[in-house]
Amino acid sequence: MAWQTAADCLARLQLLARSQQHMIPEYEVRDLRSRRLLSLVPRFFEWMEACQAATGFCGEELPSAADLPALRDTVIDTLTTLEGLDIPDTIGHMDLNPHNIFCSDSGSVFLDWAETFIGCPLFSFEYLLQHFRRTPFASSSSEEHFRNSYLACWRCLLPAENIHAATRLIPLAALFAYAATLCDDIFSHPPPLPAQRRYLLQLLRKMDRMSHQPKEVCA
View 1 (tube, rainbow, N blue to C red):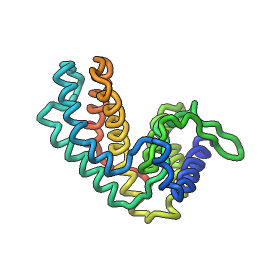
View 2: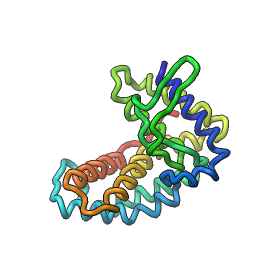
View 3: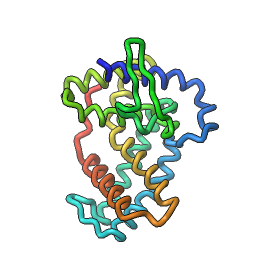
View 4: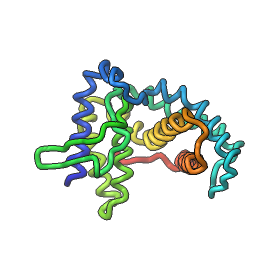
């Protein structure tokens, strides 16, 4: 299956790039390492309060200003716990989708590395997984095979309990990494457009929902 081939090749690429981690920042890639993401948390939630005040957006189940401190603490706890699992930082791709991947019997080629980052490798798989879930053949069984195709390589390097813990934390951590990076870009060139504010608030709503969901993931 092409999706499983892509997942396996992605993991192998990231493992190979791990030994060259010290060279990656020289190419001005995005920094999604734990220390950087934790430093973005206070600003991100300040920006979200500003978005709410500016737009008056009243989306369904949008967390109120009073709810934001609890969500902020959950994000900090998630990122801190993930950092403690000692998953090696390596190269990643923030825009992995079927249009950026060519698969063949001999392997996969990943295109369009404009959104390259250094950080937790499992973020890349999480972004690709979101596209997989939109396919007609997505199911709990096929998703498990897809996930295992990616994790197989990492099981040779990391303890099983660390991988299991990471798979529970990654959805929220990866979503925050994406939202905070986008927010940083948008607010670096103010003022944000109304549509941009609404999209950021939609991501915030998704983060809030995710923070209340059971974190059991098959790994």
